[in-house]
Length: 351
Image (cartoon, rainbow, N blue to C red; front, side, top):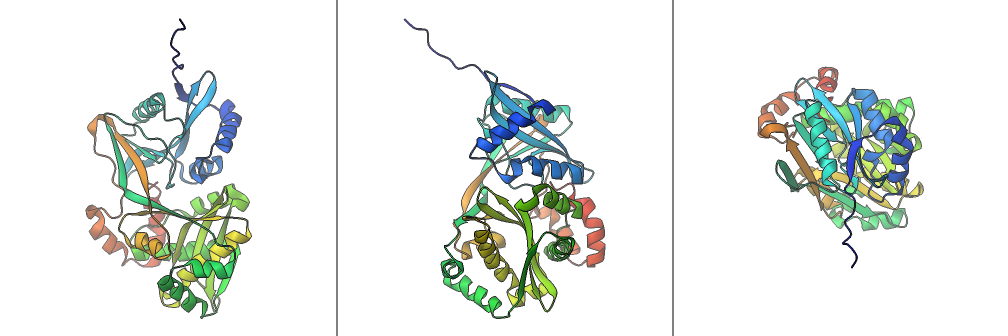
């Protein structure tokens, strides 16, 4: 009689420089790898913000079975956290969600004095101390149409009318990666987030992502009479375009510049060979959530897991938290020059 077969247990450890090639091959071959798992993203975040990168591996019989990239986020305002991955809406484990990998992440968080551990997507842990949310955020992805006309017709009627109104203003659409594109984008984005009541990320983060991703990132800007009204920095990954950091000025609203921007990006991405438009994530039942639904996107629930050491309260970086209501109202009234000066210091800890 043959003895029953039990697979060897996985072993988890911190990756070292000698693992880089094997990790790159594993991520390249795995269908669940996102832009936020790529070395370009991890390096850009570390280089621009100082949040150190740590990569955990789980192995079985000498082969990689799971990869968990993490950023060690530190902030005098929001505390310390180990996050997969910093400034990303995705991350988490690629491959097998072995308990040894999650245990190693907990041990690393304790060793680095990070009381909060956050995993954004991927296989999630179960068990004591872990809090899993599946109803707080949703993702939005849709297939791109065959051509520009078909893309316009694919937009639901009411939203399509908004796009047509914007197109009627004859605005200029510009795409690129140069210093002028970056300057216009940052100016528009900084004004946009100030108007929403949130601090702007450091400009060096945007530059590092653009430099790291190379041709897999670009900026599309909508201008009227030479003035930028709306602008978006997009990432390209495995046939999908993700408009990641985008916004518009006050004038963009009346000109429907944001609507023109997203329609133009769909057409631009198709021209680059993309077949999907990834509208990113939004918190359920917010304005952004309903805006994306108006474009014909179907929300897909996203799952996140949080663990805290010794039962401590997790860090709170949710801008919709009631504790920030008064601060947001105050921030919206700040002069833009002042908001842009102090905002990056605050936002550096919101990874």
